[in-house]
Length: 112
Image 1 (tube, one colour):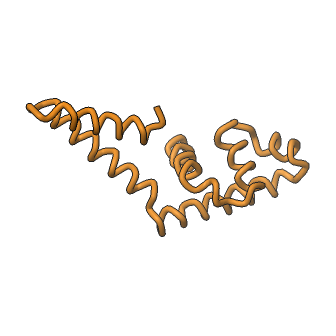
Image 2 (image 1 turned 30 degrees about the horizontal axis):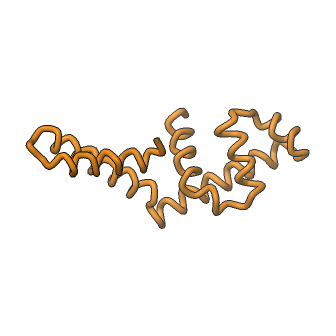
């Protein structure tokens, strides 16, 4: 279950802004704030079943976006390749500017 929650969290990072605001809010409350269905329902003034339906529909939509667009997959691959290149730079006599550039790239994509 934890892996699925983590995957949904990543997908929300990539595709959350294209979701309708209400569904984005529900997903944020459920996955990021860790509220229960009942707590979300009470806060938004809807039924618990409506919250559950919205979460399930949105999860399906997020996986669809990833299947078609692959932004998370490509981001992960690019990050992995940049980390491997940085490791190779550190093991060899590579130009320090190249190592600095790769370090900056990884820092930028990780949000640090």
